[in-house]
Amino acid sequence: MNSDNLLLLLKEGNHTLVVKNGNTETFNGRGVANLYILLKNRPDFLQGAEIADKAVGKAAAALMILGGVKQLSAALISRNALDLLEKYPLPVNFEKEVPYILNRSQTDRCPLESLCQTCATPQECLSAIKTFLHR
Image (tube, rainbow, N blue to C red; front, side, top):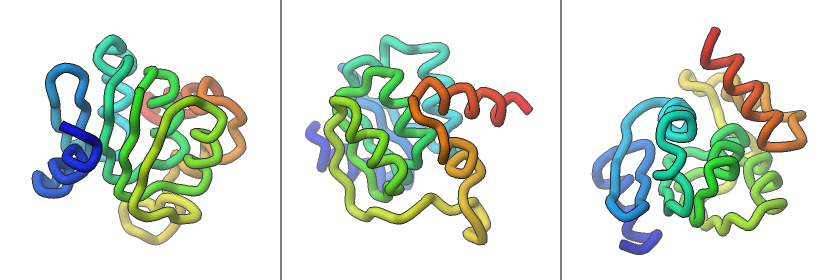
């Protein structure tokens, strides 16, 4: 299954995340929670994986970099995510670039996009993500 097929599976199944590393798994959770849980509990599944994601902000990009993801396909990606990804060897293709990811109510920036905006490294982003998810 190539990256175009992963993106198609993502959209047709109305999933938020598809991860392929040997087998293919789909996820429907909101935000970066699924990526964070995979990084924490199943890092071997992320290492070398191909991913299709519905919306990639800087926080999600950081988790993918830290997880050793091999290829990313995104329906939507923020400029901050692209800026971070350009510093690491993680090829990305995307359908639409936006200045930032919006929150669930579409009224402002995603909270994690705001928290990670000034983070210089994926490790700094991870610290912000941990704080946000464990509040």
